[in-house]
Amino acid sequence: MKRPNLQDPDLPIEDLMSKWPETVAVFMRHKMLCVGCLVNPFHTVLDACAEYGLDVEAFYLELAASISSSQHTA
Image (cartoon, rainbow, N blue to C red; front, side, top):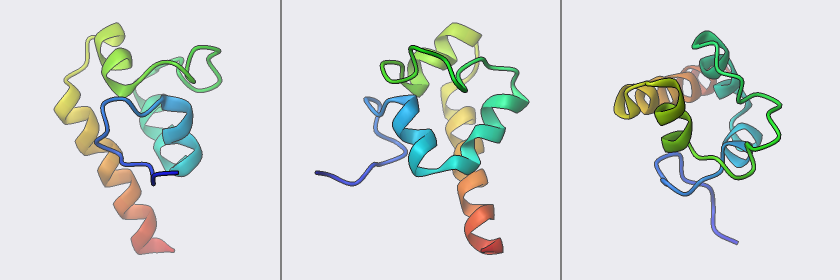
């Protein structure tokens, strides 16, 4: 089994949130309903950004920052 990669365009949101729970705050900050959504095992960050009209690159940067900041405080 390969390690999850945040930048993997095929990484399901469910796997992303399981691996990096600190990213949930990013989805919540944007008022995205991805947290607990029944389709998050099938949707990716690309799908969610398209659905909510968000810039993919900027969103990935926010996700990475949330992971980085949690690693520095741990």
